[in-house]
Image (tube, rainbow, N blue to C red; front, side, top):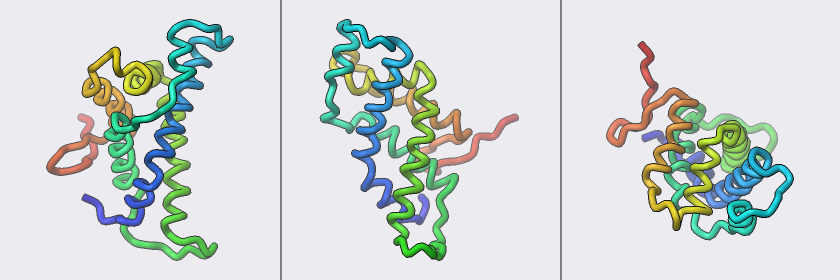
Length: 160
């Protein structure tokens, strides 16, 4: 429901590239956590050879994180950029840095690593995409203390 169309467009342009990097980051964190010597086994081999072809199942996670970013940090007023960059490039740089920071934080948690792997590498076996997407979105909601409503958009969580 925000009005920062330039930021939203910049986020949409970067979606596939950032999600591909997310998968690579998750794969690396998996090996650091569970198989630092990279000894071959069936799970590790599946993860190692996986190439992202369909990022559609990570789309909801990306869109929710992008929406939270626009809600928390986006501004609908353009500011003067004294370095000669245009606003779209500025937004792309800031959004990319934020995305990397958040996903690096999320990758420190075992459940996030498993959720991304389940939605990408192991999806044909699991078949529970909606449940896994909800787990991933839970990281966003808890980290930023917001709720996402279909009608009202993103709202702050009220802590009693």
